[in-house]
Length: 227
Image (cartoon, rainbow, N blue to C red):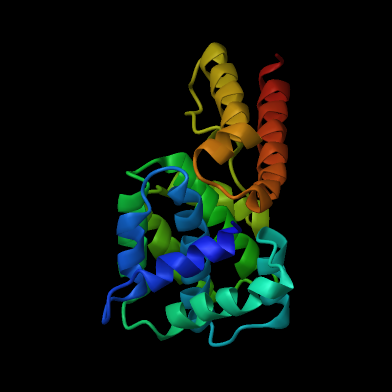
């Protein structure tokens, strides 16, 4: 059964009058969390599209880069996107339900933010409304400024990130602590770990950029400290 068929079934299970945000309460455990993750990215992408006022062809293409959509499933994908855009619930309600779904697992929530940044930057422009939207989503998800800046630096040209922020360590951390943080970050970005968190296989390709950023940060700190 394809993920899009599972999504269609999840939508069909909504009671009359229930909004899309209600679906997140039912998708907290594997393997349903993969469906929940996909719905979360689509739903928040739809809300983000309203933030800057339009959905561009580039954004649609970027979405297809994250999630493969078979032609036979396009109707299900379009239905979900339109349902999210028309839902009276605001994006903040979605974000709160998504945080509850992942029980404050910061790694899974960062995976979600990666997908949103990828789609936001698809047209080559980082709109102020998109920045405000993503900052608010990150805040609700419990991701601090360090995490947000680190994520943003990988997608938005000119948005520099402190290499220590990328590894989530302080500047006065001991060498052993920095090395351990680097190794932990590499493990976190491994495809097997991401799939265990509920990330669909298609979206795991976004981790390639994360791994490059992690290793670049480590090499910068190594050179700085003469390790």
